[in-house]
Image (cartoon, rainbow, N blue to C red; front, side, top):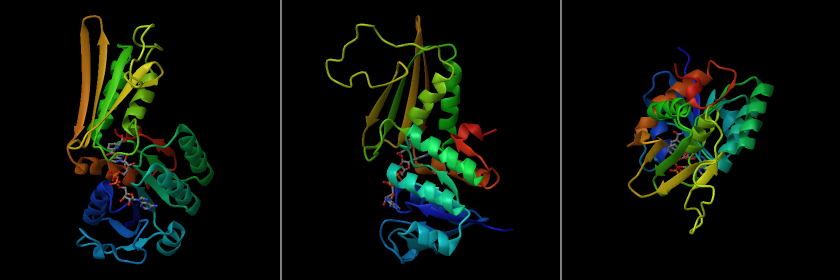
Length: 266
Ligand SMILES: NC(=O)c1ccc[n+]([C@@H]2O[C@H](COP(=O)([O-])OP(=O)(O)OC[C@H]3O[C@@H](n4cnc5c(N)ncnc54)[C@H](O)[C@@H]3O)[C@@H](O)[C@H]2O)c1
Ligand SMILES: O=C(O)C1=N[C@H](C(=O)O)CCC1
């Protein structure tokens, strides 16, 4: 069986380490290289915390792709770096699976256009945890019946982007079915700026950052005399890996741009 040749960007990060483990443990995957901003030319095995790995570290994506000719790039870095990597991958004929969050809607349109031009598959997944994808789908369903909704996302305090990619995606999915409404009292005033959170189409998103948390989201709906809460919790980063695997397997078969795993889970 031919192996899927994979490059991981951000291998020393919290998600990257889990992804390296996933690739090493999956029979038909081969880790052909990793992209870091340090340690050019070393073997990942020489770096702290890695055992049973054999992959060259590159700091130059062009050199990495030329030498290794990967099938798939798994990007788990930062928004700016992730966008650059994804564009370069598509230009090189490498299929991107992107977990990095914080892309703008303009970034997503640019990537969609590039996919059309190149005929390559690309998957951008704000959340790889299947439970989180279901939480978003259930929230979208509930929003047909409840116009009033507050999204509360809670993450560890090392997270760079706010609101989270998951919260933005949830708001986007809800707004496809929710009757437009500016929530709260029309004379509502914030006495401390930001008290009502971010405003997306009249609904509010609140970002909590605390050490001890991993990734959590509660979507709260309210109407006359009742509330409905839909919540998902990731307690470790292994929770994201079955979604990463699904995305890698799917991107090898698909030639389209996919934003969100809800579009590929059955
Ligand atoms: N989609 C999901 O399910 C999911 C889950 C968790 C995290 N995330 C997202 O994944 C990203 C990474 O999260 P994390 O918690 O692992 O962060 P992290 O800070 O632990 O890891 C990011 C890694 O990127 C590396 N990096 C920075 N610049 C680089 C460059 N130029 N080339 C290569 N590597 C570079 C850093 O050294 C770091 O090791 C974030 O955007 C986060 O929001 C997504
Ligand atoms: O740890 C993070 O950072 C996470 N980011 C994603 C987001 O922004 O939605 C998903 C969960 C973890």
